[in-house]
View 1: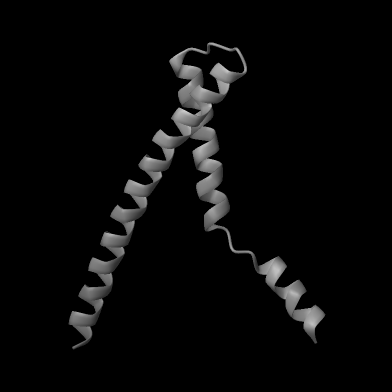
View 2 (view 1 turned 180 degrees about the vertical axis):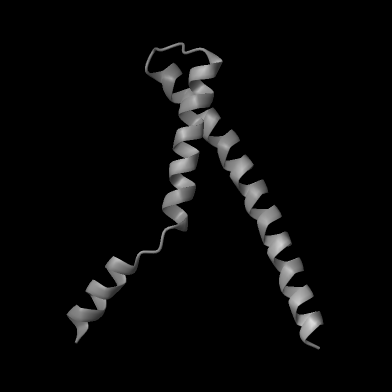
Length: 82
């Protein structure tokens, strides 16, 4: 049964990776729309490569921030309650 458990873990990891990739691409497209709309509201007309670059930086920063654990915040709140 150990082999089946390992295979199940592998399949679930692959499915989780695919879901995360789809969500990352979706957030990138949404960020492109937000950057382009914000530039239009500010009166700027940037070219597509600058919009894509800034959207990529913002999406990567959001994904990295979401993946980082907030252990520093949780230990502070734990120490205050004691």
